[in-house]
Length: 181
Image 1 (tube, one colour):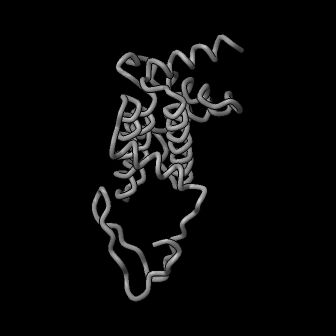
Image 2 (cartoon, helix red, strand yellow):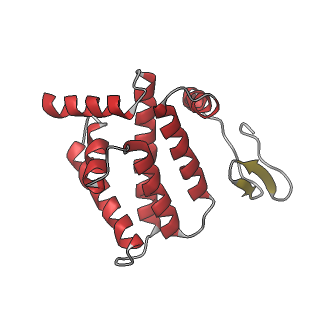
């Protein structure tokens, strides 16, 4: 549906988690700059070759699932789980908030302190929701968490394309970055 308007009534499309309904007049535009990214994700989804591919695949499934849920709190928890799925491994059993924040921060070359604090804050919000002791999840919270997850997912795809095929290798890379500075 590259750029064509859907005419007539509502249209139904089938995806991985069911049906999506598009309102009349919705326009779908293909953006050429996403072609390479779409191709890489298609390869990861259809022909996973490594443990990192499996992590990205699981995270994409969780991300897709949360789009089909209306409750903001549940979506937020699924997005936090998506982030955990991307960055945590069997070796990360304790201090999850700290590990998520640290790994997220070191995967980006700039604004590390800002990213570290942002991830800690979002994980605190998730914990407050899960344990029933906090403010409700709002649209801004969801948007913030989605931005974090999408950024981390894109970075994991980049690392995968640079030859990082296990979380152990990515953890070694992060450790090297920490002690290089």
